[in-house]
Length: 352
Image (cartoon, rainbow, N blue to C red):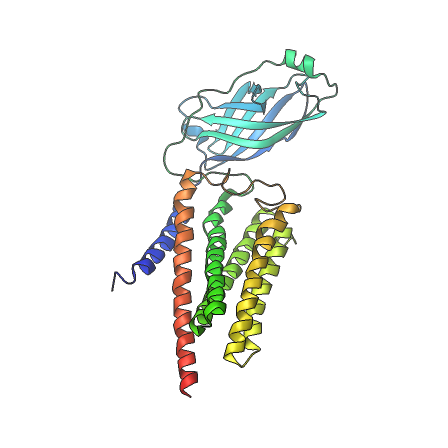
């Protein structure tokens, strides 16, 4: 019995693992906020810094802070004062000319803590310079290189600004889409097989798999809407990725409407098989091609960095990939149960 159902047990264990580990492993310390976020060249900034999961009071050595323009131009804080575990005050003396031809220059904030490790806050402050002379600014600039940074020990997920704790949705929202695509791929293969052999069991398999694929797609779009609310400010912002995904799911929903409109089993199976191939042919352009050609807030679309290049570090992969495998196996299991029901219904129908 165990040998026959090992993949079901594996699927359940992987899903449980991804849920438990994905929710319990803490995020790395990070920087939530720095104020002020605007400054004038030539003045001293007194920055108020708010941390996340930080232990500023427990540093074994003085905390260091830098404003970073680029790899060749960094400015160390003149003074860093620890207020409590989550709050710092840092002072930076900005030169009157900056080594940049831009009127407004963007700096990132970097902190180094002996226990929390290094933290980065991109676009921390925008500095306005009245006079622009990049060459003179380069001569005036006193570079303080960033070196000997500390590293946090122990398992933790990356802290990313804006995402914060919602980064955990990576283990649920994204795997559902992967599992959906795998299952719908299997479904279209079954449709091809039916049109090649006209074996009704292939049609049942295609229908069972497609129903699970649609279910996973609906869960994916629901978890995506919740994520969007926390990061973009609205459940549905009519982003191109959201719109094309909704269209793709509606196309697949129409598959079942089409099936229910025919009484003749053979006609239902033939037309459903052709339509399933059409639906799958639209899936790739709608989900992966069109969003890349238009402006989009979604990672991997509209020129945004796709998930995996920055968001997915080695620690997250330990949860992300098992979640994909686990939900795919669970989906196949659900489809198998659905297939049994369809076979039983057809058997009882033929018997009558």
